[in-house]
Length: 373
Image: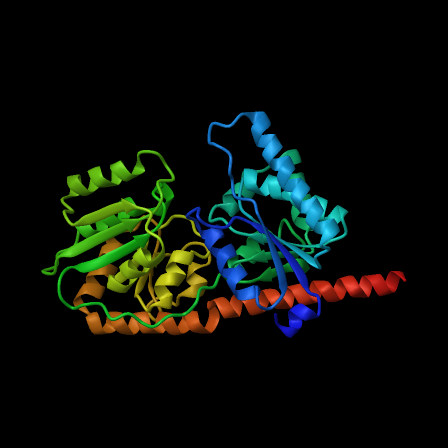
C-alpha cells in the first residue's frame, strides 16, 4: 500500500461493477484499478441482483439491504469520502437516498454524474421533482461531471463552485496498424437502441461508392428488445451484406476487434463521454462520431477525429469515404487522437484529478473539525 494510503485517506465508492456491460460499470472498474494502490478503497457494488420480474417488496428489500451496507461502512469504517456514481431516472433517486444517508452519518460525498441523457432527465423535471433534484445535487460536497458542457448543464441545478470536471479515462495502449488487405472494417461499440444511431451507420455504408468492400461490426447489448433483429433486417433491406451484429463482446475478444478495425464509428444522438470511443482512441483508431455530449471536447474535428451532426447520414458517408480513400491521412488522424487521449483522457490523468478532489474534501473535513473544537 502506498504512503498516501497509510496516511489514512479512506474512500468508499458506491457504483456498479462488471459483469454488466455498460459505461458506468467500466468506469468504476477502471477507477478501482487506478485508485486502489493510492488510497484505502472499498467498493459497495450496487448492481441489480434481483430478477427482472421481482415484486415491489423484493425490490424495496434489496434497496434496504444496500442502505444497511452503506450505513455499516460509514459508521464502522468511517471513510473520509463516499464517492457515489449515478445516472438518470430511478438510479438518480436511489442514489439521492444514499447521499442523504452518507451526509447524515457525517461523511463527505462526491456525486459523479454519468449518463448520456442526464440533461433530458433534468429537463423533464418540474415542480416538486425539480425541487428535490436540486436538493440532491446541492447536497453533494462535490459534483463530478465529464466535461465543460456538462458543467454548464449542471450549473443551474447544483452549486457551480462545487462542480468539478473529471473526464473518463482509459489506459493508453499501442497504436494498431490495420491490414491494408481485405475489407475496410468499421467498428461500433454501442448498445442496440435507437439513440445510438446504428441505423444511420448502416444507411451511410449503403451510400458508399467504393471499390474496397466494407465490413460493419456492431457490438453491444440489446437494450431495446427486438433492436438487433431490426438492424439485421435493415442491413438486408439496404444491401449491406457484410455486417456482423453478434451482441456483447468483451475482454480479449473485444480487444481483438479493436486491433483489427480500420475505424471506429459512434453515430449517437446522446452521449456523455463514451468509454468505447476512448478505448478506440487508446489504440489509435481514427474516430468518426457525432457532436454530442463531451465528444467535441475530446476530439478536435479534422485533426483528432471526424465529427458530424446526429442524423446527418450524408456527412457520415463522406467521412467514411475519405478514410477509405486516404489511408495515410486516416492513420495520422488516429495517431493524433491517440496522443490526445494519452495527454487528457488517460486513466492515470482521471485518477489524479479524483485524488485532488478527495484530498480537498479531506482537508475541509479536518479544517471543520478543528474549527469546531
